[in-house]
Amino acid sequence: MKIVSIVGARPQFIKCAPVSRELRKEHEEILVHTGQHYDANMSDIFFEELSISQPDYNLGIGSGDQGEQTGRMLAEIEKVLLKEQPDIVLVYGDTNSTLAGALAAAKLHIPVAHVEAGLRSFDKTMPEEINRILTDHISDLLFCPTQTAVDNLKKEGITEEHGVYLTGDVMVDALQYNLKIAEEKSTIIEDLSRDLSVRPGSKPDSPVDLKNDGYYVATVHRASNTDSEENLGNIMKAFAALDRRVIFPAHPRTMKCLKQYGLYESITSKTSNICLIEPLPYLDMLSLMARATKILTDSGGIQKEAYILRVPCVTLRENTEWVETVEDGWNVLVGADTKKVINCVFNVNNDANKKGNHFGEGNSSKLISKLFMISRKNN
Image: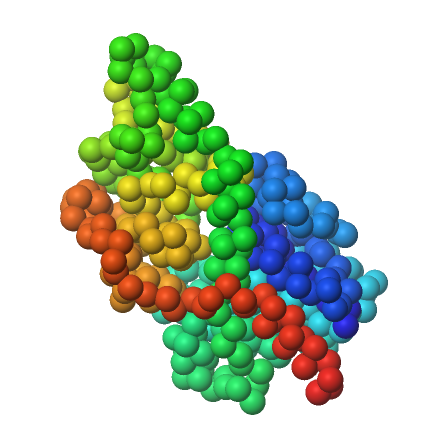
């Protein structure tokens, strides 16, 4: 079977890696990178670290408004599909790359397969929610990470007879494969400790030791937070009030907003406990998250990674598509409320004995590859 796989953003590169390894054992895969994430630290290095084959096509779309970006992707992906004539198009997650790939395929009457089908936050103000719903309703194979996702689709009239499968989550495959590599290769915690020890204002007789001192990891990138001066300001106030250093790899758009709103100077001052850094390569980020005291994020993928790593998570959103992480007590939703953020960081139970295993055993990629084989035989 000839499969065109479409990716464009950091989380999709991570999900793609284990699936691509399995697909290429039995199928021909053409990899298309839309260029939605184009910064080297958020794109190129992921292909190197995760041993993903270099894209057959890099469309170089870059950033833009929602409609503009999706439209440009749609036009360029269509050209690739007309040239390659694949048997099926595979898309991941909920980005504009996901929707553009699915739409381009559907309009050319090419079957669509969706990894992470069935997720719902039930908040249509989120562009990602619109992308999820539309992609699911034009997909022919829907690979659901959880039973909740299967149930969500059933409520919308999409069932097993429409190609719905409970596969588990490919992110578990990725973490299991890469965590040991990260622990062996990454020196990010030692590097940051050394850098903070010589930072202006640091005490020369008290070197920083993040591993023993403890630290929080934070990410903020959603438009609902970055495009609101009030929300981003409230989140930064909360970070500044915490009792440990906050390691904050900043998305390029987030960095731009921090400077635009006049927040950059205060969070990078000598006295700030916020350690603002460039986006990290995947293995470094994985190592950093695995040893964190807690994770603060508005990222859907990182909520789930925190759950799999058994690190308590404080989510800077009012809702989540990963409801299992909240139900099992590993995640708390706080929005952008300064007091709630601080209170939850100090009071979220850091109990390693809490249970929960909603996302599978790490064999999702193999199952997805088998389902492609079954689909080919049935058609």
